[in-house]
Image (spheres, rainbow, N blue to C red):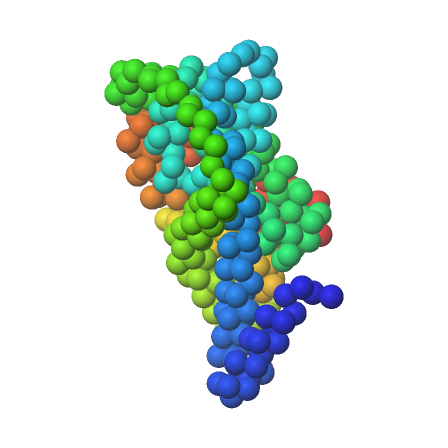
Length: 324
């Protein structure tokens, strides 16, 4: 039984009972989609962000940074950095302090970029939502693809010797080792801290999520099935790069884009094309470029976006060819 079935009943009752909208009407279908997905996703946000607050309490960025910088990994540092990117809920807005902190600790530029590429693309809420909408097979393939994107992108950028393209002031900052203070908090105090942090993060993400759900609801209710099939098909060789380029001016948290991707797939867009669109919205947006411009010179920024875009397009093609 679907654990979210009560939420679907509530949504049906509100839309078709209280608001008295037709079950086949555009507005009724869209509103039902919006209410149900909003309730489900916000519930998941609260639960998962609470548990992630616990993980972040014991696994801080400083610990990750010190772990990567503590020894030579002989090539595995790219993979470890990408793995850390998948388990830590950071977005492009966190890129500047992470970028500076990692470089200060002596972590190579390419390894740092592996983390920055992977981190916005995967988080725990996104994985759960992805699994609920597309199944675990596609979810696992997506997570693996995002990690490969981080590893290959960071490796290629690391081999291009672009350290001089990092903003000068970054290298001038002296690393200050902060001493960790071990405070033994009571269980009651920790529960309160975790709840406050989880709720705060949920509150910050929710507007992006609701906006994404609203767009998805409009697509779901007003665009007829098969509409996109006329223009965006697997046979159209340019569909994936076009979807990637179109996504660049946009910006949203990965959780907010998933409902849009779901609606696009339902309307006939191939899974790989929709996935490329989603990854580009999250990892190649203009707002992210403006943020990264503060720590990267133009050449490094162009290489960073170019290598990431090419890898996203390749992933889109591979999903269209092999994932049905």
